[in-house]
Image 1 (tube, rainbow, N blue to C red):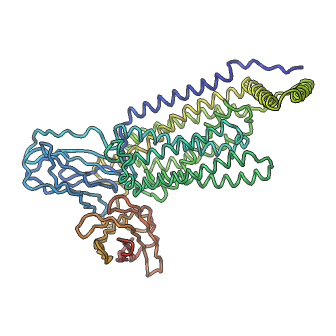
Image 2: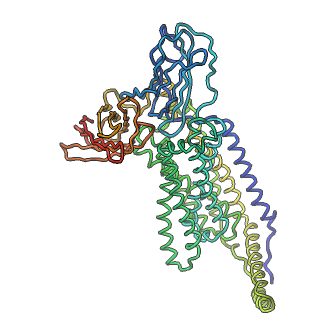
Image 3: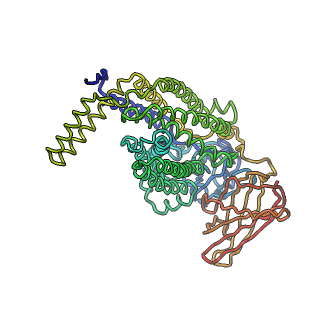
Length: 640
């Protein structure tokens, strides 16, 4: 007696195709709107003031123009330009001088003497400490305003075609990370049988490919993205070398190295692990893969935390680990959601237990996202006015609304999960059918060539899988769950895009403080920072110079440390190696090593430098100017 199969309705092949087309259209629409309306990326640092100020009219020509910023920045040789009314350079075209003092970040350029009356244009471009390019322009007048042939730049730094491609790569990188980490976690934690499912393998591998390709594109475009804006400069070896010496460049290279380890993890997960049949061996391998994969995933997430918003501003020592947890929770939730959608539409074997396990994982991820999101929101916004009156705050409100919608849809998914059964997993065959099928298979195997027998076996396997899938598709609980998960995935696509936009938008706290002309909240109170000048001489050629050190806020706990090295000619000086150490001899503490990162030529920084106790600290600085020329100098400073 043959089993009666309920009418499955529309073709099971058409439904996945329709779902895929819907998601593809939605992704295209969302990213099209984002790229068309977002404009160039803003950044964490902002111009807080200038002398002369924007629109000012001064009686006599100033000797210099100075610009103040809310955060540490990196400037190049031609980063500040002053143009007279005819468009000619009014500055001496020397490298901007670093006039930073205390908690105020300030740079200046000298002007030619005897400048005539008229309106002058100041155009500037820099790189914020959180990796984003920033730019702007303003005017001032000497004597009285006049006509000027200089047009203010219409394109901000990081804009144009290069900026569009870079932003696409940024979005793709986040999407690839979510699929790679979330898909792998779904297989290990929720559905171990998914390791043998080809659709699941493709999902994770495509996530790895997307993240790797996007990282390579970002690394190559980093130089033109922060500089000329020309695609040809992507292959400038000198520019690429300068990128590798920066914090964002080091983060991208670290990500590529970690992706190499991730490739090995994928090979083991879908190779050795998928082929294991002994449950004890598989359990041990699951633990090892979970630990190794967790370390790699955490490292990849840290490459974002160490180079973007979390790495600068207030409480960086807390913000970076929180940012890593936030990214991992996003990947576990949204990547697992994508995996569940693929499993429900493309595989016939996933059971209710795996769906319920993912439901628990999703709940835990939401708890982590809530806790870390609240902290991040406070840190980046800081006030109700910044929440409602800045672009960052408005995007944050949109993100919260999308999360609320996603949770509402997830509630319906949980209801369908509760009703889900495995009764339709394996259709039963009548004993006679099974025996008849078995004897027919034996007869066929005996009468045909081995190649034909193998072909028949594959056909029978495909037919069996099709039958099982048809029965699953006819299950109303499973169909309801698929529709609900598809709706979740659609909202998640928009949510992920908005989240990515937040990483490239100036935080509300900084934007509001810049608009008020005040330094960032990370700037310490007057008298707090420690400022030191220390001459050195390594004894070799070009071995003389001066080390300038700023420690902010100059008290116990977490501090930001900036180091500038000037050569004997007063210009920024690069050295092959720079190391610092802090020692409190009265309490027998230290030396505490500090290895700063190079931000620009002659400028290094280190965030979250921990000073455990107030006192008279000795600061040792080791400067190496060649393979053999090195010197260590020291100076004491009261901290705390």
